[in-house]
Length: 555
Image 1 (cartoon, one colour):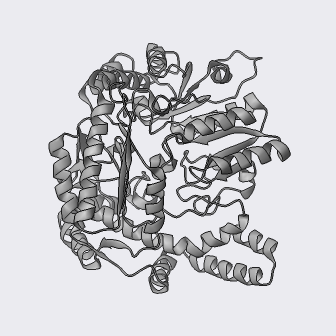
Image 2: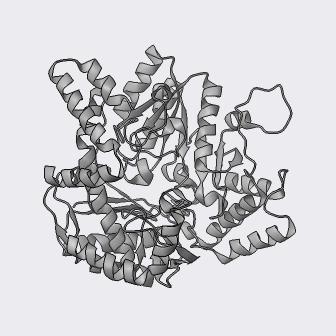
Image 3: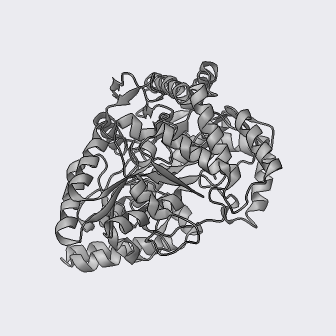
């Protein structure tokens, strides 16, 4: 694995935790190669031992309570970030850099709730203000509270191009609202997203998630295909393909309302982009009259106090907020940006003006607004973005050394406090293409992806059994609470896990068949999908492409 970094001069002094930028071409090439190599994961014997001697014997309370939860909660957990292998863990305490489970085990927490706690979990200064507000006001009133003004002004101070800000209940809601604003402002319908990017779970955005080029095929069950008629997906880090779509939309489809991007790359930088990529996207949006939307749910107040827009020195028209904007408290979301666009979200009972309607009973509640305001102040006061970013550098460099030590094909890199550790290549496929026939490739590779994903889940279970919590076994968020000693202890634990790893055979038909047999017992639609693929291939052989495409895309 080869990763070259370019030092970003002056960023640390300006409050940014991203002090170096990895070569995106090198990383993406390494990720591509990972998908063609054998799977390196904990051995079956090691995984069995972990399940029996740690999870079954030492985590009995977690096993019991989550088993009962399955009777009342679908899957037994409410959170997509939770590991289900071999069963979900029940947590009772989160503090600083650590989390504690119901059986009394202490973990180094690199999940950090998916990113909102850059100060560390349950940060005392934020907690104290939250308790004070609850005692005085209560968490929600339904009317204006001073905290709404305080957080809007503070965001504007940190990100001057966010001229106005409306707080909402989640990142998903905020994306929905921003797209509505873009269409209202431009009078155009189409939206372009980047393949593999995650922008919440609203109908139109569950398209090409995680794996580029998969369009509506992987995770859009229950969403009518017609929903995606005005959504386009382009290859990550490919301005030329983006311009092709913008030009085509302009000439034949009435134009493009907005281009929405995760500025560090899809899936929080899992598919990294060149440092000047966002500058090119901004220029293309200007050229073709589309609004540029930055989804800063993860990057806002994490990569730096000025967000990704400050890091890249690119001004978006609209910015999506989430996670840190509520200081780790519930109802974290918001839309900010140029006043002429955000004004379309004006609330209240006054009528007559054109506006993009949004709402939310708990949106901008006093508790979330105050927690967010205090958290942003504390981030500045403690230089939290820089401290968390340096911890991310130390963790990444240590992981790279361990990968070399154990002669593994893994890929590790970071964007400050967002650390990526790709072990199995499960999410490293890319099916990006302008041709809809690419859906057949997705069908063909789907089970291979799932085999690799299962191996990734085994790695995640191994990390947890060694006292490390990650996001899906492949992403780690560092916080201000991560001292050098904590990072070094974590690396010792990664060393222990990597010593259990061996190469499995390359993903072959037998592995896929075994996987499909297991899944068919849980999900009867599996064999139907395989029958569909077989039929589509026969149609293709007969030259009946249109029918093959229609059958492949049909639910």
